[in-house]
Length: 107
Ligand code: FES
Image (cartoon, rainbow, N blue to C red; front, side):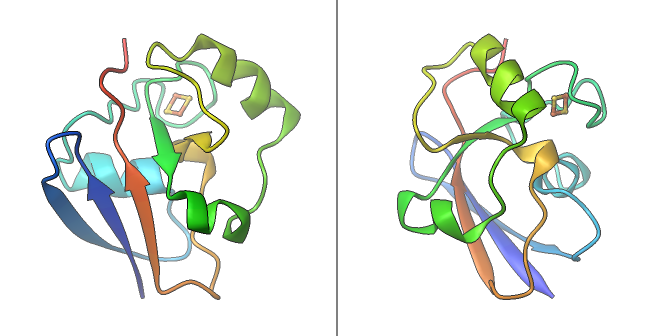
């Protein structure tokens, strides 16, 4: 089982175990990670699951689809090259730990 390390803007962290079949957003919501709302439940309709994937790991997760790229234009925190919608990220078996940074706001 892999792990996601959620890093808040104040530097606090929460480590969450994650199975290969659930998204990073779902892992966050189920474990009470602050700042990841996931209002639409993962159907690419809200952009409230925005995260910044650790830049060193950005190439290790599958790239965003066109639909995700389009919805990323609706995030409220600054959009960066490593911005992703966490409902669209599942951890590949090649990664033991993924580090994501929670943005300053979601809505
Ligand atoms: S949870 Fe709504 S777009 Fe990710």
